[in-house]
Image 1 (cartoon, rainbow, N blue to C red):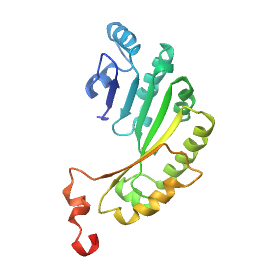
Image 2 (image 1 turned 135 degrees about the horizontal axis):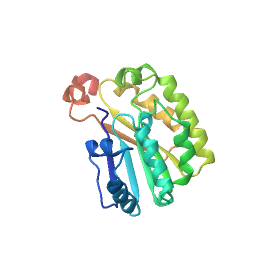
Image 3 (image 1 turned 180 degrees about the vertical axis):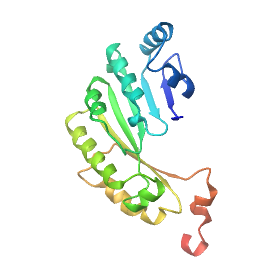
Image 4 (image 1 turned 180 degrees about the horizontal axis):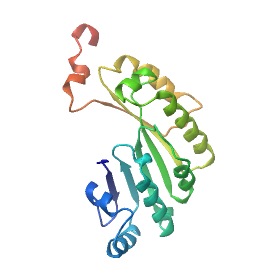
Length: 196
């Protein structure tokens, strides 16, 4: 089952993963009416879990918000590894108040491919270039980066920061966080001489 996490902020409803999957797109008229009335209060939509840009229900939801006439009041944040970037997502962005792509990138080239197997860095780079180009012509598209540092990428973080900081690359935020929940990957487990 595809793991969906939708956090609807400033709204009167919160879908849990099983509810959202079962209600899209074959919704009952009661659920659709509730969604329609609730969406008027929606201010920010966080879309994540797995890879939200590959699922048809993501576009269906965005399209519904446009059709309901409420999209121009909504900020959308995608938590994505950017292994895919459907053109229709970029095309619909102009109808929203803001569309942010929070890109999880843990390294360059083979480092990222190892940590985020089976991703291909060249595909991520191509998608990032397309997203960067579009963000220059559509002012409500923004790019953020989130990197989790761990023993597999700690020695490659400087090159990653240089890549993200490239003057041609648009970005609004860069977050660097330690790995959590996996002590075996924590940089704290590195031998003392390496840490020094």
